Amino acid sequence: MIYESPHKTIIEDRQGEPLHLDDKNAQFSRYFYIESYGCAMNFSDSEIVASILAGEGFGSTRDIESADLILINTCSIREKAEETVRNRLKIFNALKIKKPDVLIGVLGCMAERLKANLLEQEKLVDIVVGPDAYRDLPNLIAKTDDGEKGINVLLSREETYADISPLRLESNGVVAFISIMRGCDNMCSFCVVPFTRGRERSRDPYSIVAEAKDLFDRGFRDITLLGQNVDSYHWSNPENEENVNFAMLLERVAKVHPDLRVRFSTSHPKDITDDVLLTMKAHENICKYIHLPVQSGNSRILALMNRTYDREWYIQKMESIRRILPECAVSSDMIAGFCSETEEEHQDTLSLMSWARYSMAYMFFYSERPGTPAAKKLEDDVPDEVKKRRLAEIVELQRNISLEHNQKDVGKVFKVLIEGDSKRSQDDFKGRNSQNKMLVFPKTGDYTKGQYVHVKVTKATAASLRGHIVTDHPNSKL
Image (cartoon, rainbow, N blue to C red):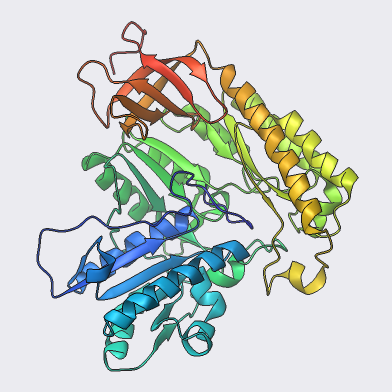
């Protein structure tokens, strides 16, 4: 998912793990090493940064000790995320003792939030670059080469990096992300994103479709359209009064090719429309999966969070999804122990989860972030031990729901895109179905990564499905 709340995000198998670029055979005079943490947008941004640096003659390396430039793309969504970054910076600085000329840079949300603190007070880095200033990296590097510090954290109302072709990092050649918009206009009281990424601005739809076509031509078969709130995507051309909303964009991308699977993340409950749902229904290659964060099941807490909907409204939106897309899987976010949350209000979250039957969820206890409306106006008064106990109850309930959700798939046959080898065994493939569920199945026949197969589910856990390829399915000849 791309939605950024006070927790980790969207990419479970990458969350908290460093992202590296593939080594290049060409020789370069300077090399850079990059790690990326946090939401999918950060990983997408790292691909933009890599493209900018490649244009300046930098090569990439997996060997941090051979790098001339070390970059870390950061998340500021929770205190733990910032602690992780600081620990990594200490390790980088230890390397700098051995190699004084190496430059260390912080990118992304933490860079914007802490700004000069990282340069002057903590003296951990040479370069600080916010999410809207990546084009300025070459100039900042030149400044640091001359002995100065480089900082640019200015936010923009126009920057979308639409003209930059991202370098696909750690790509399996099958799955890719396309950023369709930047920033966020929602002012959820707990969230730093509007302050670290600025206001919403949508990218030219023609550049998005062109990127999707290019990816398909290069062999990619599964793309995710990214935005803090994709459903509020809106682009207009004042010259001819053309207007494109998210439902229209989704259809344009789906029409690139029937074999190109299209996903999107994340949706805000207040903005997802029946037009989007009907577009999903009309196109088989638009995956039947929606991440619809609820955050709390209690209306008073939702009001304090400034989510702009209440429990009943959210339930109605879920009912619309079930009515139009009965096969659609829905996942969510939950925050335990938000300011002043009572035990009864916590039970409301549990009851909503029981009703919604989410396929999976991202679950965290509330972590106050400096500068947010909640930090300024609300008291973080739920004790940590209560937060952790409530979170444990949420996690346990969702684990049971996810297991039950997956067990209902035993015996069913799903169209699965092979994404590569299973993590646990090279004798197995892994791939996702339209509902974003991961399936693991033995390698048989001459199938390879990037192909579609039909898989019959034989076993389910709370996290994944296991099965085997079937060739006698009516639609097996893909």
